[in-house]
Figure 1 (cartoon, rainbow, N blue to C red):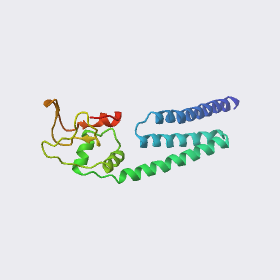
Figure 2 (figure 1 turned 90 degrees about the vertical axis):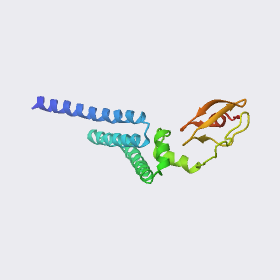
Figure 3 (figure 1 turned 45 degrees about the vertical axis):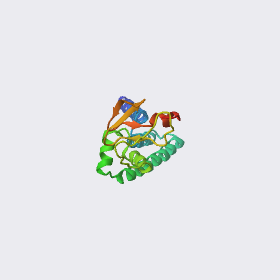
Figure 4 (figure 1 turned 180 degrees about the vertical axis):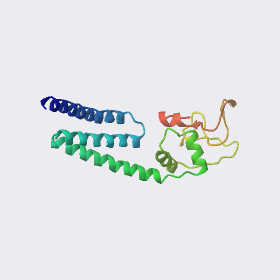
Length: 175
């Protein structure tokens, strides 16, 4: 009888250690996620496993209560993120632009960018930026070609997906 009780105690101890370590492994994985929704889901899973661990070992109330608080916070943010993402819908042009240039953005973040920007159509020959002159906007070519001239001679052609003015904006200088 004593031998089986010792084996059960060892197995339960091992299971508790596995559960406790698994909770921290999930937390570690959440730290390397680039997708905020996946990060929050892993954080919630980690919190649930940590709560189970605390319950199984009758852990300190402080640790248990903080895990419950953090779990609630992450679940609230998951619900908020899902609501935001559910409300995203693209026009055909926005979808094409998103899929070709802005794939690193979450759809919600891309739509925030779209709200502060505007679509423009320019006639051939329109000057979008002049060398050594301030530039007051950053442009992305959605559909078309733009010639780059230096000293009156064409030195390059820009096509769909190319940025105009981003370096001037980032560095605060002229085109």
